[in-house]
Image 1 (cartoon, rainbow, N blue to C red):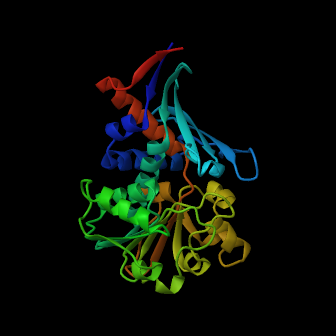
Image 2 (image 1 turned 60 degrees about the vertical axis):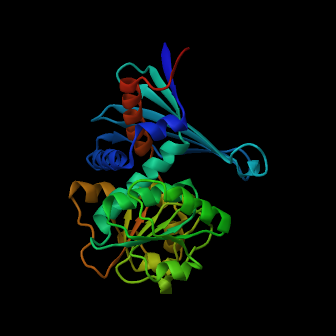
Length: 328
C-alpha cells in the first residue's frame, strides 16, 4: 500500500486561495444540506496547558474523507519545536485505504482564510476598501489573502502586540499577488478600527483585542482566533449589536468564548445568532441587509474544511506527480 506524503510547502504550491474559497463554500453548502458527517472535535487534555485535538469529517457528495490531528503545546516556546503540530490523513471513502499524509500547518491557515473569504463575500459591504488585521501570524496572512480575493481592498492596517512581527508581515504580504501595496502598521486598535470596513481577528487572546466604541457602523468582522470557551477576541457589546453568523451552531456554542461568555452574561441569547455560513452560502438565509448593520462571522474551524481542501490537494498532487510515495 502506497501513501503519498505532502509537506506544507507542497500544500502551498498546489492550491490557490481563489480555489480554496470555492472549495470551502461547497463544503459549507454540503454541511447545510445534510451531506456531511461532522462529529465534534475530540479534545485530549495532556497537561493543564497542552492538548491534542482529533478532527474527522466526511463529505458525502465529493467523497472527501479525512482526519486532522493537531497538538497544541505552548510549553515548546523557547525550544526548537513549534507550539503547534498538525497533520491530515486522507482516506479513500470507497475502500478505507489511507491515501495521503500531509502537513496541516498551511492547510489549516488556507481553509480558515477561505471560510472568512466566503463570509466576507456574503456579509461585507460591496464597497469595502479598507481592512484591519489583528494578529500578524500565519492566520492573519491568509485572512488578508482571502478578503482581497472577494473585495477590492485598497488599504490594509495590521496590528499586533509584537512590532517585529508587524514589520515582517508587511514585508511578506507585499510580495503576494492581489495584495495592495498600501499596508501600514496600526499604532493602536482604535487607529485600525476607525477606518476599517472589514476587521479580521486572528489571535490567541483571552480578552477582547479592541474596544467596541471605536467600531464604525457597517463593519464586517471575521473572528477566527477564539476556539475554546475561555478565549475571547470580540467585546461583548460588539457581539450584542452584530448580526452573528457561525460556521457551526453546535461547535460554536460548545467551543467559542466569543459567544459562550456573552451568552453566560445574558448579553445575547441563542436566538440572536442569525444562522450558519452554509445557510447563507446556499441561499437559504439572507446575509447583509443594510449598509449600517455590523456583521460578525464567528468561526471555530470545522473538519469539513480540512477534508474538502486536503481532498483537493491530493487530487492536484496526483495529477502533477508532486510529493513522495511511501510504501507501508
